[in-house]
Image 1: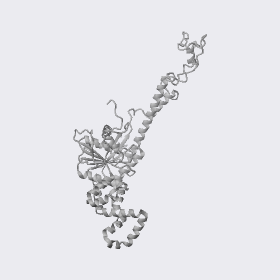
Image 2: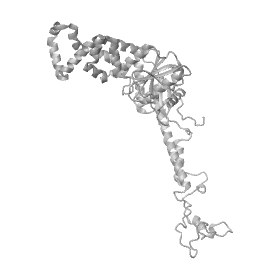
Image 3: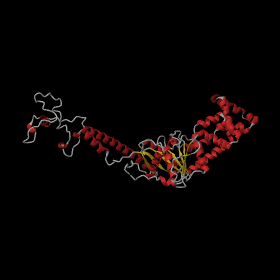
Image 4: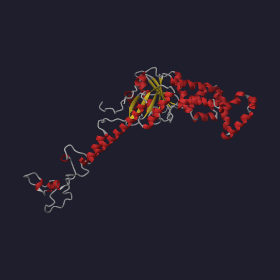
Length: 461
């Protein structure tokens, strides 16, 4: 099988033509950490970067040493700025972004009416699809300000993590829908003439909606739609412009996945979706890949060695049974016990006399109490140092075998993905021993992203 193309991250980050990097993927694969690590690495290589996260979790703020993130980009301290770069971070505040749009595109009186409308407050706080659309709006705002060299976007975790690509289409469908046109009709026609003109149809429609939604709610919706009418075209225009920005050459999408079957199945879906939308895919970040510094010892050999330590009889020995230490074939037999008890002179070397054990007197000596351990000293108890070491070594060998099976499974899963998507460049990030919670951890992840070395680092290097 041909090796997968390698994704070279540093040239992508260093290229001044790269202005937007979008990290997408299913939930729990490390998108937020990847986005933050990319932003930190780009900043320390001389670029002015802002990282926009849409994940409501506080991991990004904590790892960057910031008490909290909000809708305003905040400078991250502790970044090596010797190359002239800067790192800023922010977390999307969906409602605040919506409020900013209203305040920027409506006169003060109309803006106040919209912001105070109960239906608008519900819509801006959590209406389906609002988060994705507001992410598009915020990305457009950041790019329009032309203040940063690079914008790194951490997309929201969901089954369809590319929902923000659909935001302009869904918004257009909503604004062009029959319900909106009906609700806008009285305001467009105007006054009593309009109400008379639409009296029959509107009375039927509002009667039905009033029963379903409630009269006051329907009135709030009509007031909101009338106030927002002049802004609807602006919503659609800006969303379409941001969508085209995502398709532009200066944008790069990175699909983040774990080396697991379900995660790579999701990654394959993202790759296909991006291709269908003509979005520029830079490659796949395969996160949390396991490695081993002793991969020359196969799982089969490790298991065989463990079994030999636990029961020497089931594996052939190089020196035969004579070389088996603590072998049950000889331990506890009369040949091994008699020399130590002094009762069998023929078991000793020719010409020598039997010698009583120095550790315990002969059980037949007069006046000596019977020693319950006599005759059993040739069998090593399970708690002897030798058996303890053997048991520990066998356990470690079995752990190594499990690790090698995990490595083989991850490699098969990756090979299956690359065989079906040979055009996708891949970089692997080694699994870390713990969670990333500071800039040093993000810097380590960034280095692993750039070097594509899934194996564990050499402690002596």
